[in-house]
Image 1: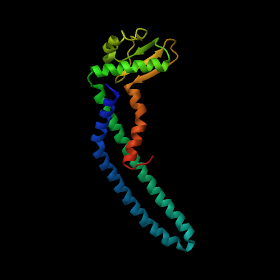
Image 2: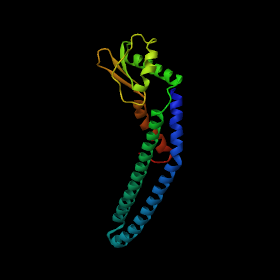
Image 3: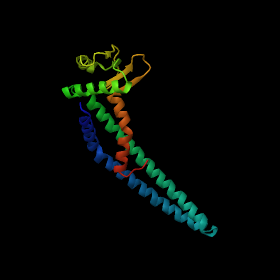
Image 4: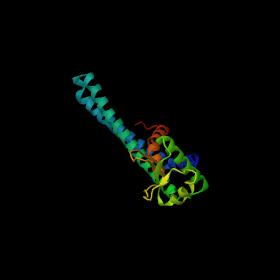
Length: 198
């Protein structure tokens, strides 16, 4: 699977969840507005009680109440956002777990081996794969004659882990690791799109 197709799959799943996320964010915003309105009513009562103490104390209390309501609203929005990002990644993981191992995916694995060799600075490496990818990797080893396939399997959606000959450096080049690395960027992009700040 080429990385562009992987990104397209991710975009598709994100778009599928977008309307549900928007609805929940809107509900959270409405709840927050209600909380703010209640806070303002409370603020007016407090203002009447402390008017004699002076404007300075009144302004201070107002800022505290509004700040607290805004913080609560922001926290609720972040929780909703995180919940939907987790749902998106669960859907992506399910689709990737059941994906067909095509010629494009074989090319993707070959690219991962190349990247691992370059990153580790040697072609004398041992690679680890899951059960589904073992046959594909074996067919690629003619091209990578110094690469050894470990008999130990790893639990992952796909991709490889590579280990230097002396075993001191392990490079996680699995789809799982790539998803984990992408999650903060996706979270930031979605948060920006929906106006939720971290």
